[in-house]
Length: 80
Image 1 (tube, rainbow, N blue to C red):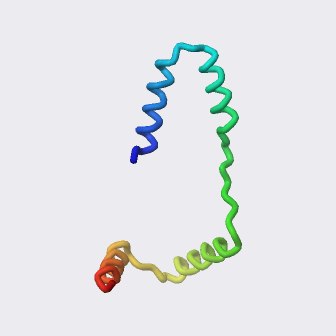
Image 2: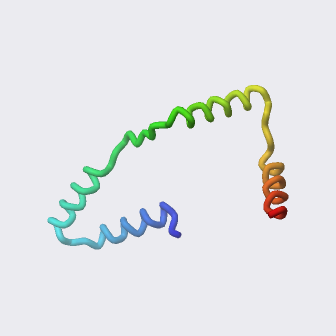
Image 3: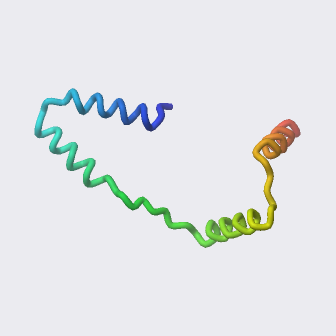
């Protein structure tokens, strides 16, 4: 799967090779109409509650390192 930067670079290369003005105008309109600057995601009440619980865990020092979590996950996977 291509990364975002690879896709973006490929698109730029393709756009630079286009000579048809009408096509470029249409493409510009398409991109302008679909581009949004406020891609806000509305969270459900359950998601908000989980984030609040996470904040409380952090405040109260209930943390686990990534290394320890990886070890737990590996042990769990080996137990399947």
